[in-house]
Image (tube, rainbow, N blue to C red; front, side, top):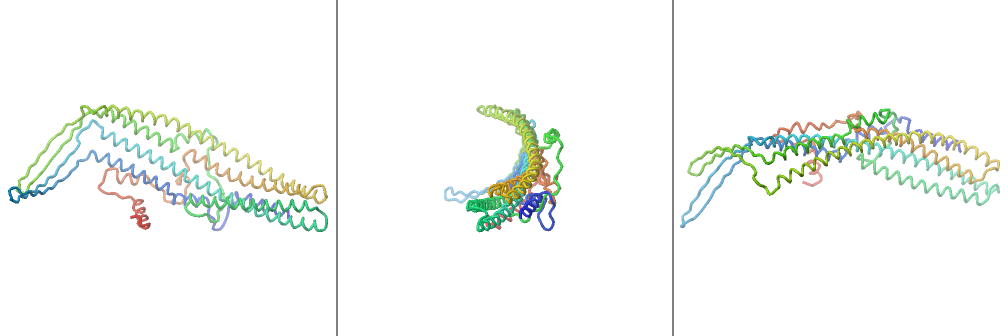
Length: 453
């Protein structure tokens, strides 16, 4: 019975490193599903499209604008009906503003690049959460099976103890000890089943649906061999750093724009009008305008953007330190998991050997029932620790990729259409009259289906 139990636990413990066959979901399948279903990623794609439109709005400020006005009036002076009508078309175009509009366009472009980096960071976080959810379900599943086997083993041992009590080989105390351990094992099983249910709910929240049969992970992605090498990659690739770098450039452009805010603007204007008598009038002109005194608002705005520039510059420094810390933490977690896995393997072997010895000594009367029960718990704890260490090691590898900022669908080679953040930008950057994204159209269909529109 003991050998059977040990072999079952061993099979469960090494399942994390043996490739599964059949229709089981692989980690790549789950990551691809999370990438497709993530509402957080879709939300940030919409934020990026809005930032793209800011470029179009800035470009539009350099384009000519046209407007029209039509009016009709009725009056009745001295009991005489009088009607009048007129129509006019106006045009206006900025000719020169000392580069303020162009600086606004450049700042909007930098904001787009910062928002793209934020989208990549969200993708990293989403995929890492999917890895954790995947491994959490597998961990909880293994824990439940270990507990189920433990309950079966202790139940069989309880029956054997009761049989031995009937023939006078053990005391009532031995039976009570066995009964207490069975009750504790059932309580532990219920707790692990609850943990599995919670892990499945978390999996659904991250991935989009409940997990099916999950396969083990065959091979893990390659990571830099040293922490310093990973930090070098993170300094150049991590989207958190890239985001703040572009934010710094954007706010520096806004500072330059604010420094020119007191300079004048030159506009060309035109007007064509016609009234109900058929008379028409045309006018063309140049307008030079600029502020003289704004109550201190211009200087205040300049100081404000300078303060914002200083804030973002300091944020760049702290973000670099944060990324270094994330890389260091990831490698520390990996080192702990590897050491824990090695120690757990040793613990499992020693605990199993000790259990066999205790059982033999129990048969000879040199050990008590409590000694056997305690050692069986040691084996269960050792196997549980081994499962957790194996899961933690795999998660730590993906945490390293996340800390470097390269945990993306494209880098992992997931079987999904890779979102192109430049596609919408290229469609709207020149401020066309109409452009609607496929994502917006899809969301409109969903909203209509939900009765929201």
